Length: 170
View 1 (cartoon, rainbow, N blue to C red):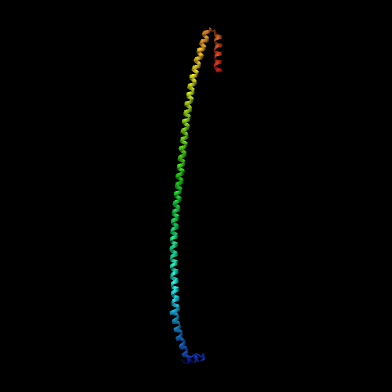
View 2 (tube, rainbow, N blue to C red):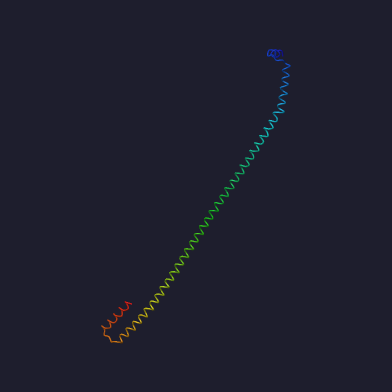
């Protein structure tokens, strides 16, 4: 202790003042801890809690956003699939309509051909009837001319040639 006392005297430190300063320091440390550090610690803890809460909320929102994104991607995939189906259905309907139109056109062409054939046949029948009438008229006329004069073989040939020329001109 003497050494300590000697050292304190050399440094010009008095023991009573040192003790009072130490007690004052402890009281100051206690007061600072109670009135300054605890409130600061409480504020820091509240801030830490708020930050943790905000981070948790941000994580939840991030998770919700990921779920919403997945849901949107599923919806988009469904919409794209539905659009493809509708397009395929429209193409199918268009092809069916085209096939029906082609079939209708083919049937109409066949009907027109049939009508044309019928018309040709009627015209042929009409032409045959007219030719028969003309041949009959010619035969009657030839017979009348033959009766008017009696013919030898050369006159007969001349008469037939004349009649054929008349028919060719008509």
